[in-house]
Image (cartoon, rainbow, N blue to C red; front, side, top):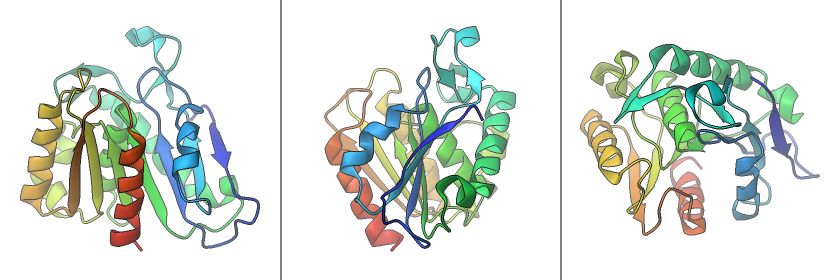
Length: 213
């Protein structure tokens, strides 16, 4: 993984909540540090950079987690490489944040939301909660119904009703599959486009404190 940014409260110690948030397509590791003012002051925030250069896929000068194929389809190889990169990152997390994490919150925006959801569903118990901001559930064999049925990580899924990049219908499709599999989930929609509303972050934090306390 090409690097990360970390925001660590000066008095943070072992047992602190650590939020790992993954940026969207064509962005970079510093993007979601903008959410820092909307998160609890005692949380550690780590934002890694995706492993794939976005330019070869037409995503501009930033970075990407996978090649998007349309609708809810992704290129399997790129997604698998990113899931492996997230796995390595989480294995090294204590050294990266210089403390022994308590709760791990994994989430992200757009492609980052899709990847964090896929990771949490395929790695039960790795995170205390997953935050999906404007992402979707990838249609991939690794996320078959039997895999979803074994997943119990609580999921907060927020989406914009005016999102033109990832239409609300894709979120509805994924939410329906999670609900059918019995995955604990809170779904909320916001009158925004393809971005994160500050109220959405507040709702996500409340969800974490309620379901992953």
